Amino acid sequence: MIPETWFIDASKRIAPHIQKTPLTFDHDLNIYIKWENHQTTGSFKLRGALNKILSLQDWEREQGIVTASAGNHGQGVAMAASLVNASVTVFASEHAAPIKLEAMRSKGAKIILISGGYGEAEKAGIKYAQENQSTWISPYNDGKVIAGAGTLALEILNELPESSTMTWIVPVGGGGLISGIGAILKEFHTQQNNQETHLDLKPKLIGVQPKASAFLHAIFKHGHQTGVEDLPTLADGLSGPVEDRSITIPMVQKYVDDIITVREDEIEQAITFAWKTYGEIIEGSAAVALAAILNHSINDRPAVVILSGGNIQKETFTRIVGSTK
Image 1: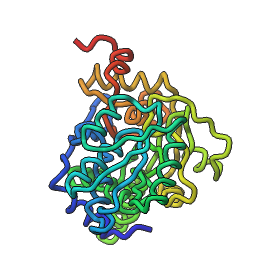
Image 2: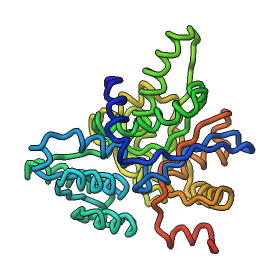
Image 3: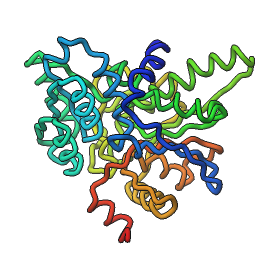
Image 4: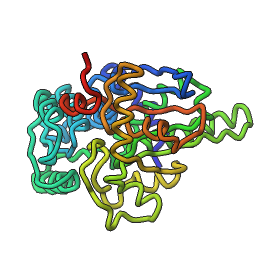
């Protein structure tokens, strides 16, 4: 679906602008944790945004860039656009976290707030881009964005080759990250290993989504997202419907073994656990993956757990974990 060379090129293209984030091992839980909250913008989203924007033609940049975001993708787009002197307009929900809105503005993005949730912001952004002949950059429905996200898997596999046979646990919203990881882990890397060793390597890939806004979960399980509730969730970056005919849908169906959901109290538990156990601040959208381990929804071990970001509102974090002094 996406050529292997795209992932390799993406890794080279974005390398000068990203952090190689830590990969640690928890002996008690028997899990490897990838800490993308240490990424330059506090989220893995920078990877895809950089790869897409640095791949644009001059005329595409000159038309101005438009996107929709709960905050992390918008920050990545704004930072990447600053490297090529392009203007950025981000459509965001009126309910977006203030810390994320301010972070996008601080990186030069113009913010247009839309009534409703992420789905309404995405529709408004696509319409605006079409009407103004601007360059639309989806947070997930784009091969270059997916390839950029997939560099995270290359990073892990290079550091921990044995992870190619493990279970990987990944937060899912629109499916860009898990699609990129799936292509690397289950298609290109597995094919290469089979050719070299003739072993039938079968890594497992599991997505995790908040129960309060489980659109991709519904598509994966039932083939459609009709009737899915879009309720407030701590995992704001994973909420909202998936764009019709998104390229992530067939990729998820091909590469992903299962998608499960977690409750809001389980997300809070994971945020607290990460702070008290590791001294790490993670946001709700990252915490869903750890929540699936802590609530025993996933018992496969050893496993690789992707903690995708750390941009959480200070007041929300303090309310959940208590005093951090």
